[in-house]
Every structure is written in structure tokens, then in C-alpha cells.
Picture 1 (tube, rainbow over the protein chains, first blue to last red):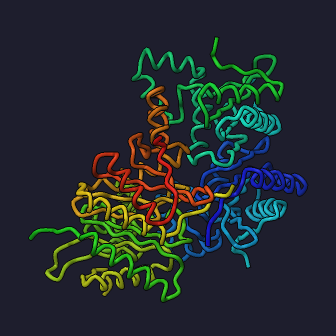
Picture 2 (tube, rainbow over the protein chains, first blue to last red):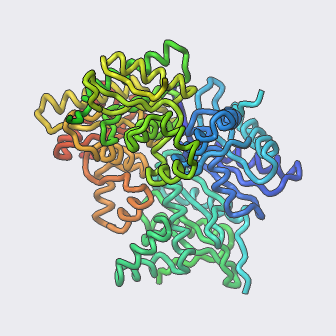
Length: 147
Length: 147
Length: 147
Length: 147
């Protein structure tokens, strides 16, 4: 199975739709980052009023799931079992890993990994909902680890 | 005089127009970053085929001019006079400063600083031309330090 | 007594057998690193689908045991007694130390240290089992600290 | 155009054939690294007698071309024009960029980027020749920037 990379056009569709979802739902200002499978930014947008660390948080949420090949929820379960594992990984990742929801894998219909989306700014489940709205708008498949 | 922050809408206009300029001119794939006056990303877009370090380079170009309040050309002149100055500043900045063109201040018509744009991917003067096209499309004022 | 260095041939035997063990057992995709006594990589292999930070984790597991001359379990016991010790060491090591199982010393039949193996990708004890399978396939002696 | 990721099987074919080329040609001991498009290691092999920094050099050669989307030769030309560009990029890349030959893009027959190979240990052009032998053995396409 081959991994492919998300395009800028797909990434901007995701970003726009995720922010629109947040606005419609009355969320706090959001920041959305879309990363390729290697963890590099393809598109990022920060709404007016979203704090200055938010880009790092959005990137961190998306980067963490790609770095480990594990969903936020799998990372959270692993961290609960073994806090020292999470600490070690966070050190190696330069902090770019978060265990809370809002980092979501993006796959194509065939299951190939295209990248990941990170959203931050509101409650974690709201952040995740915005990511899902974005990925759906691009016609792609989201993987969150939620059952 | 108050510094104001570039809006996401302005930043996305800049990003889109800068990339369009590069495409029309036949430049290599570009990455564009728009930062607020504090150096945090407001919008970033990386064209398909632009290498994975390009987001860091685009951010670094824009961040450097904001960090010192000096244009790329003023930084280059200072670095030529005193290479150790540039080395020290680059260390303090975690590498997020570049002396080559492509980091451009963005001001409003009254001269208030709104942020900076960084473009990377082609020759530095082409990168800068793309930044200027983006800033013009947003109806804002660019400051490059070129005479 | 001379420390000797694991050969590339031995390292590749270990890597292949560790990955085969993971595949046979149905583990998640694994990454395996084999280091010499100085902590430099001799061989590394990352299975398709193993996340991009996994090479750093595999190296970190093996490097940590060599860096301190202590097994993962001895490191974990020390960290439980004195968490600040682990924090300090992890800082000095640039994060390249982990207290979870999966970093295993490799010795020859006479007890001479040849290097260490790090495996990551599944539960830590499964990672360790893959490392043991690899070391056994090379006809060498594994030291994990498990009783 | 979609980027795809090199498989472990392809990477190990490249590594084995590159090292065999070096042995047949009587080169110094070599280290070969194969990276995915995001710069993470897929396979690495260091021949007996190859120094302990060689894995970093092999990774750096391959990582640099991917980071910038430029061949070694294009990087060298850019560095000759603008040494400060090279210095800045090297800082941002954590040193993982080299301008000498031996970092080679790997593409498939359709031109999709699969990753890059870095070889180090002998003269740079010999390193590059070993990389080319490896890529050819895997039935893939090498891009060096040489005319």
C-alpha cells in the first residue's frame, strides 16, 4: 500500500470548511493546520483572535498522530498506561505530540494515508468536530480513533 | 500609534495572490507564510512539490524582519559589516532569520505595521516579487528595503 | 576485555528476524534499530506504515541503555526512585533514553558488549519480544533486565 | 501529481546494491540511508569500519535534497551565489543538508517522488555512483542534477 500526499487544494478546502464549521457553531476562534504524511505543513489558517501559540498546537496535534501512526485516543490510552512513554515521545518529538482529540488522520477512499489535520481553539471535541467537517468537505476519509 | 494585526482574510488574499504570481511567472513551487507582528503564523500555503523545509524557510524570512525590525536588505548590510552579529542573532532566533530577499513587511496606508510575508522556492528576488504581488492584491503596503 | 562492535551482517540478521517475528505475531508495523556500543546506527529498518518518529524511538530505546550501561528495567526502577534523575538524563541525552522495554543489550557468548537493539511500534513487551527474536537469530546473547 | 512513499523492500534493495557496488569498486566502507519524502529513515546500513557520524551524514545528504526540493548540484550552485542562504538553511535544517554529491532523489517511472538516498564514506562522486547503482537495482529512477 502506497502513501500519497495531500494536495494544497485539498488542504485549503479542509481548512476553509473547518473554520466555517467553527464559526457556524459559535466556537472560539480556531487555528487549523493540514500536514503531509511526513509532518510538514501544507496549509495553515488562524482565525482573528486565536492566540499566538495556536499554530504550534494545531501542528502538534496533527504531527503527533503521524509521528507515531496512532490516533489521539490510542496515544491517550498509551499515556494512561505508561506516562513515561508519553514523556519520552514528547521529548523526542520536540513537544509536537498531544494526547487530546483534534488531531485527525486523512485518508483517501482506498485507505491510503494522505496526511493529518490539527484543530485547536475550543474544547477538544469541538476542535475534532471542525476537523471532521473539513475532511468531509474535501471528500476524504477521517480517522479519529473514536468508536 | 497602535500596531494592528493582519486579518486572516487579508493573509489569505496575500497567500493566494503570491502563489498565483509564481504560477503565472513559471516559478518553482512556492511556499508563502503570513505572520502577525508577534511572529505567529496567520496563514501558510505550500504548493505541491515544494520541499518539506520550505514552511520553516518562509516563516524564517518573515520572522527575521519582524524580530529585528529591519528589512532583509538592512539585515544583509549589517551581516556584511559584522558577520558575527548575524551569527549571534540567528542563534538567538533559533535560525528563524534570513538575510536574503523574500521577507517583506506589511503595513497599512497609515504606516501601521500589520505583519510580514515570507516567500521561498525560487530565486530570492522572484520570491520577493511574489510577496509584493500578494501584498498589492490585499491593498496593503509592502516594505522590502530595496531602493 | 575488549568491547567489540556488532557487524553489519549480524545487525541485518537481527533486523530481519525481529521484523519477521512482528509480522508472524500480527504486531503493528515495527521499526528496528541496531546500534554499536558508541550509540551509532549500524542498521535500521522501518516497516511500511510505521510512523515517522519511530526511527528516533527505536534509536532512543537502544541508545539509552548503552548511554547509561543500564537495562530499561534498571532505568525504570531508577526513574521511579528518582524521577528528576530520569528527567536530567533525558535532557542530557537529547531525549534519546526511554524507560519502557524494547531496548536490549547484545553480547557475545563470552559476555563482551557488541551493541544494542531498539524496537518500537507495538506494546513495549511485544517490541522487546521482537528484539529477542532478532538477537537469537544472530546467535547472540540478549540482556533485557527482566528476571 | 501525487507523491508516494518508498517501501521497505525497495529501500533494502537499494541499500544492498549500493553497498555491493562500493565493495566491488574497492571504495572505503560506506553508509547508506534511504528516506521517505518527509525525511524519515526507511532503511539504513553502515558497513564495518564506517565512522560513527556517517549515519548522520548519509541522512543529511538525502534529507537536504528533500527539504529544499533541490538536487545537491542545485544546492551547491545556490550556495556559491549566496553563502548566507546555505548557512541559514543549514541552521533551520539542524545541519541536515549537504551540498556535495551523494544525495539522490528516487522517483518512480511516472515521475512521482518516492524518497531519497544518501551515501557517504568515499569521494562524493563515488558515493553518488553507489547510490545510483542501488536505485537502478530497485528498478527506480535517480535524479542527481548532474548534466
